[in-house]
View 1 (cartoon, one colour):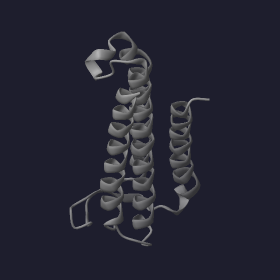
View 2 (spheres, rainbow, N blue to C red):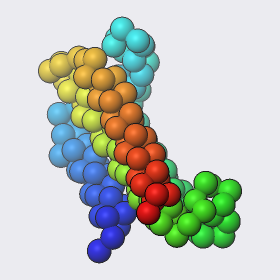
View 3 (cartoon, rainbow, N blue to C red):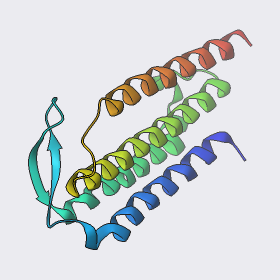
View 4 (cartoon, one colour):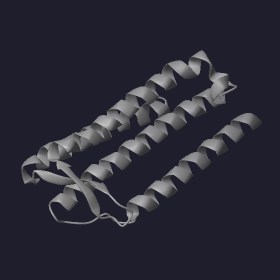
Length: 153
């Protein structure tokens, strides 16, 4: 099994976990939950708890779109996307799968954070910003290193 297939599958698992978290804790949540936060981590928009499903829906929509692009668009015209060899094309597909999984994890953490804040257990921490920044840097650096190694091979 290709590693990109594993990442695509894991992204579905993470989306399922997000939905399960909401379903399991539905009765524990107040009718109004925080849906947007300012840079200080304070809630500045509240919405219905059913709005929590927007985050997994966004994950699923993004995953569907990126999967389509990975399977179809890159094969149709790979040079437009910087993939000039079959090896580079596979590296780019894997990168898209990794980025999709990373984004699904971020949105699942968002669901968890919103639910925790709604019941008064925690607040938004700088962990999310640090995790996002470091995670994106690691994924991009790994992608460019793999592309460079593919060029040299």
